[in-house]
Length: 294
Image (tube, rainbow, N blue to C red):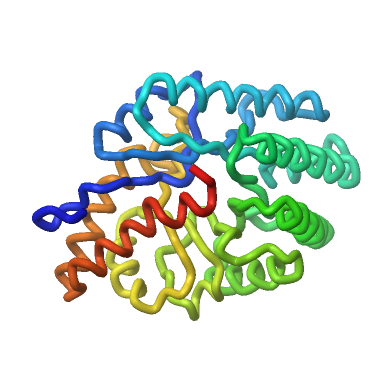
C-alpha cells in the first residue's frame, strides 16, 4: 500500500478526546481530510465542570461519550472505537472530597460499568486507567498501584484491552507496568501504554505495547528503534479538544502526517518497501483490529 513512497492504506489515531463544547466534529473533519480512517474516542473527564460522585454520574458521563461516537459514525466514513473508563486523575482529585476509601470504591464501580459496556459491544477498550502522572504522597501512590493491579485483573478476567495513563519515567515505568500486568494475568500486548515515548526497543518497553506520542522528533527515534522492537505499537495524538489548552498535546492532523514521515524515513534508512508496508499495516490495521474488534 505504498505508492511512490506514500502510504495509501488505513491510518488510525488510537487515542483522541473530543468535546461538544469545543471543536468536536470539526476536529474529526481535519483528521479525515488529512487521510485518517479510524479513531479510538477516549472518554474525557469533565475536569473543568464537575466529576461524577456516584455510579449514576458515571453512567450519564459514559452515555455522553457513547452518543458522541454514534454522531461521528453518522457524519463520517470512519471506523470509530470507544474507550471507556475512569481517569486516575479523577480518582486522585476526589480523595480530598470523598476520602481515599470512597474514591477508590467509586473508581472500581466505574471500571465495572465500563466493562459492562465492553461486554455488550457498546465500547471496545477499558481506559484510560492507571496512576497519577505527577508526584503524590506515598499513601496515594501505594493505593494507586494496588488499585491498578485490581483493575488489570478485572480487565484480564473480562478479556479486554486496556489503555494506560501513567507517569513518564522512561524504562522504569515500562518495567513496573510489565510486572503489574504479569501479576494481574493481563497479556502485555493488550496493555497499552498511552502517550508513550518513541523508543520502542525491547530493552526499553520490556514487552509492553504502546501507542506512541508522535510529536516533533519522534520519527527519528522510531526509525532508530523499530528494528529492535518486540512488542506491538501504534500512534496517537491524545488530542484534548480544549481551546483553553492549545498546543498541550498534538492536533488531529498529526497521525496522518507522521505516518507519511515514518514511511519516508524508513525507506531512506534502507528498509525494504515490503517491510515498511508490513510495519505500517500492523500499526494502523492488524494490531488495532485484534485489540478492539473493529
